[in-house]
Image (cartoon, rainbow, N blue to C red):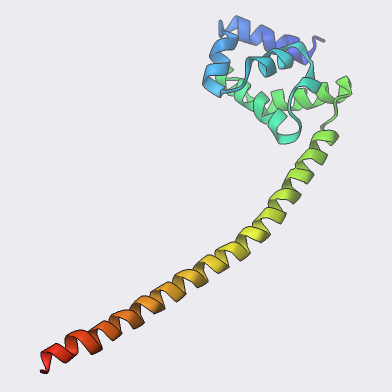
Length: 140
């Protein structure tokens, strides 16, 4: 059985799609496309990004994603560049997002309090101008 990366490259060449075309359509760097085709999975970003690169590549070639992704994951396990390290990266990324969202929510609350104070101030100021300036002129 051929290696996943060799079959992937063979499919691209059979369809006469250049690496540059894949890079242009997917916005994936040529370095990552070449690493994927060479089976150098450790050169690819980890976690969901790695799988996203493969999915984008497959879409350009119009290949069925499900069996190719399964084969990619099997090839990844065989190569020793397991998805586990990518999962740790993903978990760390998710934790950072959670932490940042918590601080963003408190910033949003403060922003809305500031907007409310400003609106109340404008209403009070408008009422004062009407009451003491305009209303006084009307009834003189």
